[in-house]
Image (tube, rainbow over all chains, first blue to last red; front, side, top):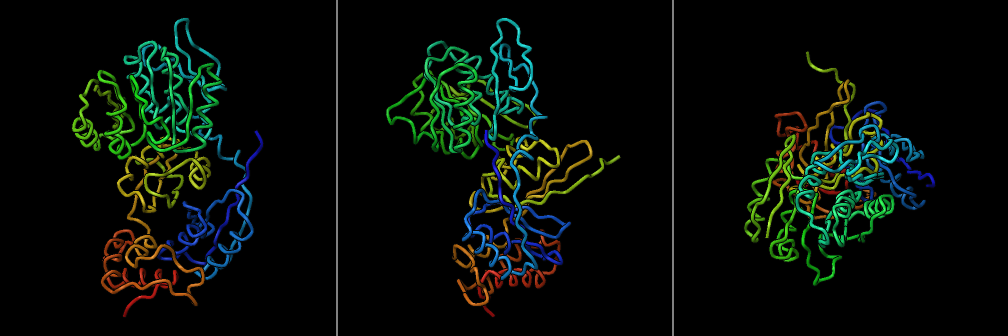
Length: 281
Length: 141
């Protein structure tokens, strides 16, 4: 993979202002959504991927107009930081049969185990997080051979791979984030399974008439609540919807919404303040 | 004994939409903390405020554990909403893109008083007025 470079634009100030937000706003004006503030040097910075000269010069002049004493520009190699999360990703057993490991670790799977080998890249889903783990556990007891499954908010594709290994007949994965879709595709190849990965929000990229034996969504509570009515339409009678990514405080809202659209609670798991559940239609 | 703090990371991130891309990746990667776990929590916790950019302060401890506090939306966001403008001026001295009424100014100041670390409403209003002006938004007398 060729190395990617980001451009760091940093506005330096002599003293920290009471409020940094006008500087942040200058970054936002040129499409940079996030910024970082440092105390030494006193600065606010934002990163752009391959910005054009016009963007840089507009940003620089706005930052000066808003009080920057100098503006520095540097190139940052993605490798310097994009790999650092890997130290947290260790092989682990999940549920009764899954064994999840990163590509750079040796296999410890036993005969009969379902091994998922992952390189999540910049996507969510290493199996390291309780939300993903609980989803795999719930999937283990839900997928029947030949099932048609949708994975909405697929991240690295870990759940789609898991569903395929459990014998699903067809899996369609989708994510709003392009990098996730690419990562999900790579992980399908890596695990020798076949599924389709699509870029888009919710069910918008699925065939309008497509229905599934099961839908799995490891996203966030607000997205699950928004997704609930259509999830109910997309799940066949008797089928299931697995939800995860829910902080305990938000669980009552997710449960109430799922029940109001016609789902019944089948199983609920909880770990470290996170809740995951399987609903039945 | 309290754990030793090794650093504080200050970021401004869109609510509910944190991703591993910069600035989050480099900042958290350098500190050696579990970025994906942080993002999961941040996005879940802040989704109700989607549409705002939120300041977040992450305290990193010696053992690479961390805690984080999410503050009220950025003053610039609150000002833009209150003044009904989409963006500030790139040349605030020449261009005026909107007007902030005294009442709205007070509203924004009140919302941010805790973050400004002050109980003085007039002081908070002065800070907000300064920010509005530097974005090319006129403050009503």
